[in-house]
Image (cartoon, rainbow, N blue to C red; front, side, top):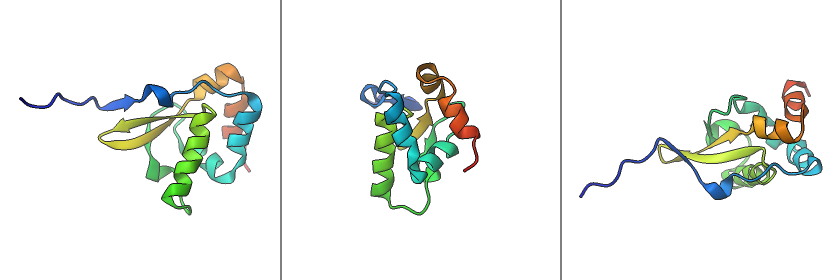
Length: 109
């Protein structure tokens, strides 16, 4: 019996958390590494591979930053072709905190 075909992308239900309160989201975005990760994500929510989202930090440090962003509800994790990807939850954050994420993404630091 052959294995069942896998879907192109799957999101684990426990990884899609509600968007946190304003302070938690701002704290998640306050770190320069996390802010750059968010800036590198496509606003339309297209998943991007982890390695494309950071430079200059180790894998374990990047994992920590991804966890903080996920827990704040800013990003979600999925598996595409057996590799972990992240996607920006722009609409969800904007629904909870109108203008916040779009303003952050539009600003130059």
